[in-house]
Structures are given as structure tokens and as C-alpha cells.
Length: 339
Ligand code: PHE
Image 1 (cartoon, protein in one colour):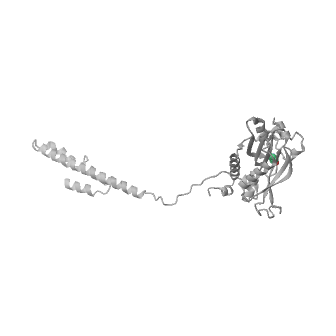
Image 2: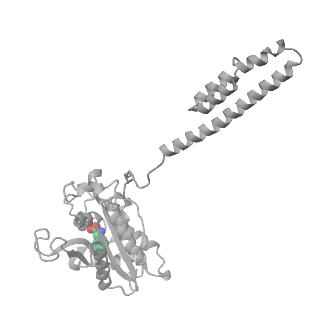
Image 3: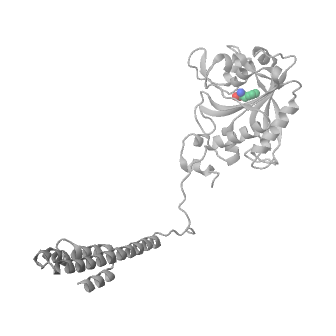
């Protein structure tokens, strides 16, 4: 019995077989239990001898089973480790990643540039008072230039801002000039009662810029716009200023940059002028300074307003502004900087 048991144990190939063997040999119905049970029929002298012998056999079998169990468990672990090993040289499965909206990417880039030049980034409300959107920008009620911007009115005095320029007035009003000049940009959404088409959207973006200090000239404005154009489009881009009209600046200009398509040679995109109009700007009107409580004898400055949507269209050759607002990921994922 012992020899048979030992060889069965040694040859057992897996843990469940080993368990069966243990139950057969040592279990309640096994031969050893039977021997021990039969002890009461033995004589007094034989009983300890048989008992000792049977116990020794049981201990030997139990120890051998334990040893074999440890071996089998080790084998099973090794097999599992081998099966589950990872080949770290295999290419990974890419995880789909989003990215900031293309317009936001342009705004981020503009913010970085101006923050680097010591400007602050200021936010203003999209639901705005007529007072800030128009009156404090030198556009009293009934001023004909209000028609330049078809505005969504909520009440007589409250509107959806039609430009980011009201943030100029709000910031100037609060600024303490004894502590230094004011240099700010204000990115955000603006609204106009336009019928949506390839080049118009009732909702679009602007970035306002404003610098107020002593001795600011139009040269400072031009230099700033050149830095901006070169940051956004490239070193070879130049800026040209043309006279224009805005009620809140005097003189007012429109700024053109070198046509991205022909680099100034003249093509159908720029109507053979070599230039593309990108923003409005000018020297802040003394009335605007006065209304914001700024001493217009001592201080002056420039302001500009640009459209990131238009910048994105020019930079990426997008011919319909509505693409930016339809939220079609097939379109938007083209501007994934992570590639
Ligand atoms: N707010 C003007 C517009 O929306 C742009 C502008 C801003 C012009 C600042 C001059 C100075 O048309």
C-alpha cells in the first residue's frame, strides 16, 4: 500500500489528480482508515505495533503529498508566467486623443505671445450693456456707425456684445495708472445679426488688444502687429496699414498682411493686391479715454481687434467659416497637433 501510494503520488500530473489520490489513500473510506478502525479487534500486544506502523505510513504519505503539491504548484505558476509574459517590443494600441478646437489653438498662441510681452489677458461678459459695447466707445445712441455692427438686442440697454472692445472700456475704467501702463488682450466670442454663409457667422471670435501709456505712437502699433503676424504666419509676413474708420480710434486703420497664397506677388485670393486684410486698429480716441476716467492729456495708446476665425481660415486654407462651428470631428481632428 505504501509503495503503491508513493509511486502514484510521484506520478500525479496535476493538482486535482493529487487531491483524488489523497482522498483515496487517507480519506474516511481509504485503506489506512480501515486499518486504524480494525485496531479494536487486535490483541493488546499487537495494537501499539500496528498503530505505530500505520501512523508512520500515514505521515510518510501525507508528507510526500505535501511535497508533490508544492512541486505542482510551482510548475503551474511557471507555466502561467510563461504564458502571460508581455512582449514590450510590440507596438502599442494608440489611444484616441482629443485636442483644443482649432480656434482655441490660435487664441492660445496669441495669448502666449502677448503674455510674453507683459500683457494681461482679460475676460468680459458676452451679455453686455449698451453703455460698454457702444456709448463708452464714443458711439452715443443714434450714432450712424452703430449700423456697422448689426446687434442682437435683449432690451434697449442690454445686448449680446458685437465686439470685444467693451472689455477695453471696462479695464481702462478700473486701471490705476499711477501703478504703470495698461497692456491687455481680451479674447472671446462676439455676436452679430448676420445671415450665416461661407464668410459670415452670427457668432465668432475676436481678440481685442489695448495699450495705454505715455508716448505711445502708431509705430508701436505697427511693430506689435508685425510681431503678431510673424508669430502666427511666419517670418516673411509683413504688415501694411490703410486708413479706415472706427468711432473709438483716431486715426483708425485696417491692417493687411502679405497674402499667404502668393507671398505678395498678386493672385486671385488677394485680388492681385498682394495683401489680405486681417484686422481693425487705431489710436484710442480721446473721448474714449475721458469717458473711462483716463487723463487724455497725459495718456494715450493703441487698440486693435482681430478675428481668430479669419486667421484660422487664412492659415489653413479653410474656405467656409461654418466648418469651425459644425463640430464635425473629421474636420476638427485635422488640426490635431499631436498628429
Ligand atoms: N471692434 C472693432 C470691430 O469689431 C475692431 C477694432 C478694435 C478696431 C479695436 C479698432 C480698435 O470691428
